[in-house]
Each structure stands twice: as structure tokens, then as C-alpha cells.
Image 1 (spheres, rainbow, N blue to C red):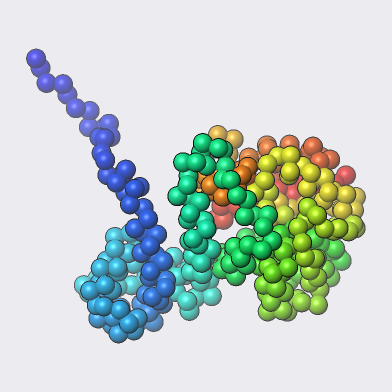
Image 2 (tube, one colour):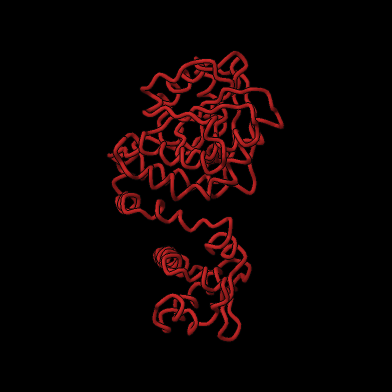
Length: 342
């Protein structure tokens, strides 16, 4: 029997992609360990050998070498001889001396609560969601951790959202910021428009963080807070703009439409809602980050999701909004939907 020719253009099956995926937590822990030990900051400050890192970070030289070599393999560091250097994104986001430092995000993203939910992914798939909705627990410390640790990651998105909704507008604006968290979205509006005033809604303990940031950015006199759940508190009326960042994905369609109906009643005619979300394409498998975000919602909420543009617009339409503008925000994985009340 003649040999069957092998088509070299066809990829060969290999177990190594599976092996990499199963061991993906190795990189997670390496990044967390390097942040906790200040490895990235030390290298940025000129401690570029395992020996120097051993002294600066109070770790074993062997430990420093093996951890740094692993980070080189995974693209977070470079190596020449025995000298390590920071990759461009590591220098920008993982060196504490950088104004764009984001290492604090691990305090939220790698919290025990979130990780435990992912360990229970099998049950989440069986039931279509997790059994406990921490998002609605006012006593949960998870959102305080979010507000304090995730703020640097949201700086770019908050400034982008302000640019989209204001477009150099400087008239007086009454603004409502829903689930304000760290407060950066409302604060970005205040920094861009000196005549705007913001009322921020969130749990009482979380709003302490927002107030701290408003003071830090010099806008505290125009920043008001309203403690409680937006579903329950009286939010008032006469708003020109409602900010709705990173919130709708926690809930199902019926809950969202109920909320949007309440927000519409709080707006003046011609008022707008600016919704910032991870928005996948209609096929739900691209772009990668917005599409993958749906799995996070499966594990962390009873019925949340990453909603497509069409789904978001349909929910707003059901709540009485008829005009929409859609704005991707590259390089951020977020998109912004601006919906106007007629």
C-alpha cells in the first residue's frame, strides 16, 4: 500500500495547547507574586540581576532567577546575559513608579470570592449562573476592593467616555452616576466641564472611596453622593446625563428594562444615558475580551451577560428610548452606547 502523503499545510494535532490552558494559573500566580514582591518596580529602578533583586526584594536569589525567567518566557520581561529588563507594557502598568500603574487590580480580580466562583464553573454551567449574587449585597467588601484597586484600570475608559458624551460641551449639566464605585467616570465629566454637577449612587461604604477621589482631583464641591441601591433609592429628576458604566452586565433583561425605565423618568427631554459595557459582536465570539467576558458573568452572577449592541438597543427601546449612538473605544475593550430620551 502506498504511503499517504502528509499535507504540511494542515496543522498537526498537539496536546500542548491543552497543557498550556490547564496550567494557565501558573502565569496568574507568577504575575501576582512579582507584583507583591515588587519585582517589576525593582527592575525598573535598576536592580536588574537575580542577585540584585534578591537584596532589594528580600527573596532567595534562586527564587528571583526562576520567577524572572518564567516572566521572560511569557513576555513580561526581557533578558540579556544575566540582566533583566521590563517589557513595554510591564514598564507602563506594573512598575509602581509609573503614573499608569495597574498592579492593584489583582486585589479585586484575584480575590478569593471571585476565584471560588470560577472553581464552581461546572455548577454555574449546569444552572446558567451562580447561586449567590454578591452584586446586590450592600455589606459585601468586594465592591470596596473594586473601587480601590480597579480605579487605575478605568482611568482611560473614564476619560474616553467623558470625551464622547461631552464633546467640548461646557453648559451646566446635572449628571447622575450609577454604581459609581471609584467615581472616576463622574469625576472625568466634572474635570471636562466646570459647570457640571454629579450625583453618585452606590453603597455607602463604596461612596467613601468615590469621595476620596473627588477630593483628590479637586472636584469635591460639585460631587454629591446618594447611598443605596439605584433600584430602591429615590434618584430625583431633571438630569441631563446619566452615566451607566460597567453595570448592566450584572442583570437579566427584565431587571435592566425596569432600571432603564426609571432612568428615563429621571431625565429631562433630550437627556441621555451613556452606557459603557463589554459589547461582543452578534456572533458572540469576537472581539476576544468582550466575548470572553460573558463567562465571568456566568460564574459571578445569577443571570448577567455580555450583551450585544442589538440587545442593548432593544432593551433601551423597551424602556422608551428611540435614538442611539454606538462608539467603540479602542484600544479599550469597552464600547459606549449613548441613548437619548425624546
